[in-house]
Structure formats: C-alpha cells, structure tokens
Length: 294
Image 1: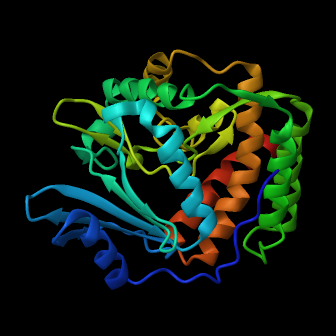
Image 2: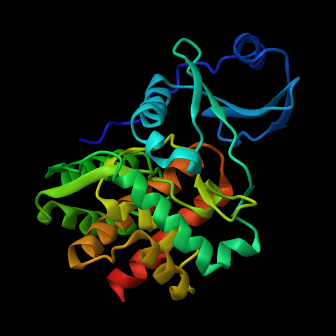
C-alpha cells in the first residue's frame, strides 16, 4: 500500500553537526562541493580528507526517506559492486549516510546522454539491481498506485483541473485490473542524472533514496518521458543491455504509472517551489491526455 509522505515537521540536521560527526569517521576533511537539490528534503556534500580521498555525505529530513535509502544501501546496492557507491557509515539520529564516491561525471547534460552504448551499459547495471534479491509476487501495485494518485490529487488545488484529474484517475485505475505482479527493488528515479560515466567507460548508478519494491517496468518511466521520447534507438540499446523488453502487461503498468505520476509530479513540484520540475509534470500530463482524449 502507498505510504503517504511524512509531514515535514522534522528538521534537517545542521551542516556543522553533520560534518563534526563525519570527521569522527573520516578524520579532518573539507567540503569540496554542495550537490544538494533546492527542494530541501535532503543535503548532499562532497568532502575530501587530508589524504585526498573523496566521499559523499547525505542526510535526510525524514526518518522514512533515510531508512529507505539505508536499507537499499545495505541489502540491494552491494550486488552492484563497484558500479555503485558503497555505504561507509550511517547515523540514525542525524538521518546521515556516508558513501564512497564513484568515479566519473554525471551523464545528464553531456553527449553521453545520447550514446546508445551508455544506455546499454545502464540497462545492464539496472538489471543487476533488480536481481539483487528474489522478486516478490503480489497484487499491491494497483491499490498502492490509486492511493498515491488520490493523495496528490486531493492536494492539487487548481494546479490540475478537475477534468484532467478525472482523466488521469481513469488511466491510473487500470492498474487494478493487472492482478499479481512480480515486484523487484526498483530504483524509481532511473534517469541520466543518476548515471555516472567513469573514465573506464563503466556506467555507475547513484542515489538510491527512492528504492522500493515495484514492477520492473517502472524504472523505464522517467527515461520514456525524457531521453527516449524522440530516440527509440536509445530505448532499444537500454533494453538490450537489460535483457528484456516490455510485454503488454508491462506497457499497461507504465500507462497506469503515467497517470499517477503526472499528477503527483506537478503537485509535489509546486509544493516544493520547483517550477522546472512542475513543467516536466505538466508535459507528462499533456502527453497522457493527448493519448487518452484525442
């Protein structure tokens, strides 16, 4: 069942408190870069020790998000070996993770984002994440997706019209007809901004803060809505690397997921003051309505 987001009552630990704690693990250090997103739900810093070793320091506002990422780092990410960060230390009180820094540069915004070879290697890595533990078959997907949709639709407050909500609800509700589905540890934010391309041409996966059990196809969604829109060759390369292509049921999963996530993205982004992400959600919804109404 979908768990509604925590009310934002918890405070982020201060930089000073976190860095003091991290220095007791890594020794004297300096902050090299602040890589935090502006939404304020977490902080991410790159730090360097006196021995010029780099680590990533990430702490979450909420217990739920912290525990979700901690569990992923402990249980599923180790299957990726050197193709993902490794957990160095954690602190439950501060909602803090200290992670190894993977080599390379973010694929997003570079020529590599349009390179079929990069997408193929990303598909290979994602398959390993999905197979890091046996799949669990259950019929929770439809109920959870409807609950997610209704939570965000109730908060739309004019950002999405009633007619748009009704159309998106009909699409989302098709998930109720899918029956039991295999669920795997899905990344759920599988985009080129979370792929790192190393000097060895390895693609490494980062940011496991959204990992939850879902049907495998949900990890195609963000790519379908962005990088693959006008680039079917990239999609084919990724699926070749993954070793599987969506069947009719997988496509039905993606269609229902599209219904819920277009509305959720618009409302979440507005509540967090992220106009560019709200525009992404609006584009998702417009594509959905174009398929549904015309």
